[in-house]
Length: 474
Image 1 (cartoon, rainbow, N blue to C red):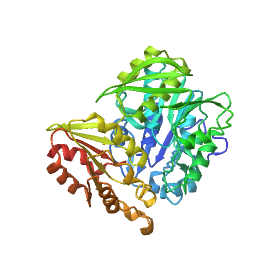
Image 2 (image 1 turned 90 degrees about the horizontal axis):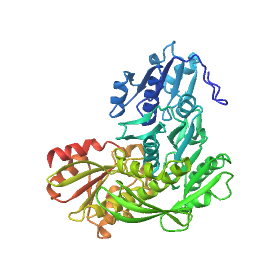
Image 3 (image 1 turned 120 degrees about the vertical axis):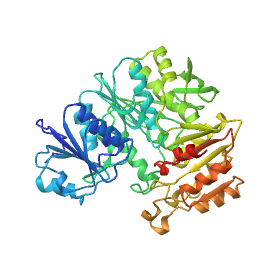
Image 4 (image 1 turned 60 degrees about the vertical axis):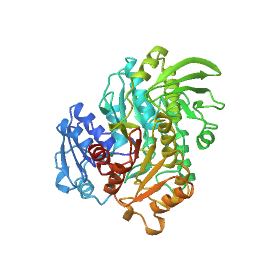
């Protein structure tokens, strides 16, 4: 059995099985291990694209459902996903057979990180975008990076890469690690450079309140070694307080207030934005980016700061910013019909919803912005944000709110009310409508959307494939 205290995995490992393999990061790990020459298998209750396609392309055998029979005697190592409980039949079989097992971040550390220098992005928002852009800048600089990121990068058509260079970019997750390790995943990494995008309350299924979230990030920040660099967003009050008195080197970044790194927006259009960068009050010149919104300017600023510390030239950074294709499900234009644009975004936390709407609205001045929202996460389906959500949809011209599809998982007294949100929005003179299911939203949009409109669909799930269905019927 794996000694969890020293993270040692036997050198004879040849066959590896992953329980809950279809998660974004677990699927990336499975593909990485396959590329390294290991015999890889996996299992999951829900096998769905895009991860199912990636696994099939790698010829990784994935069993539908969890079954003790999947834990064969010849398996050398089992990687246990964080959503898997101790009474899972495959976990029971692993323990009975005394198989070696570990968590996903332990496996990433052992197999992928090794002697590489980890560049880690952490924070409640923006870590996927920041990690993805940083990986692309390193690649454009010829540094042949590795990465493991929680989103698909169109530049690579993948969410992982095995490079031969010195750096590996990792999206650090504050979610718990495994049933045998309830600490956050990001505690397993020792970053060469860490980017902290901000700290807010989220993941209400594992965190009790903001103080609990802050303690978790504090435990990470206090572990960063003195020779490492932390780049922190000074515009977030929680982050600004947490970085005080750390042993590591700390530099801050911000939009329009005191910080080591500053970004000044200049122009913003549909597929381009220009901005000026300052370091220590000295202008470093003007850059262009294909990503819209102040939140993306801040993500970009953090990447520029990290890249310059690594030694990447301004010309390479500038080129990488303009050739970066973004991340799937982050302000991703899924299609256009009758001059009606359908946009897909992962936003679900109130701050993310607010910033996404603010970023998209100015890009479509000739039409309306129709915001379609599915509260689906463990936090958004709870009433903790009930009084906050009405404050974030203001710039939208029309709002459609779907009844949460998994509300039965939440205790009745803790449930979020989509009907109440719609009522509160209408009281604030924002036109809003409630829908019991996705088909009703599609029928409504087909009648209401007109040329020039942008339909922004926000959910962390598949939303019943609303994007393709809508585009087909428009």
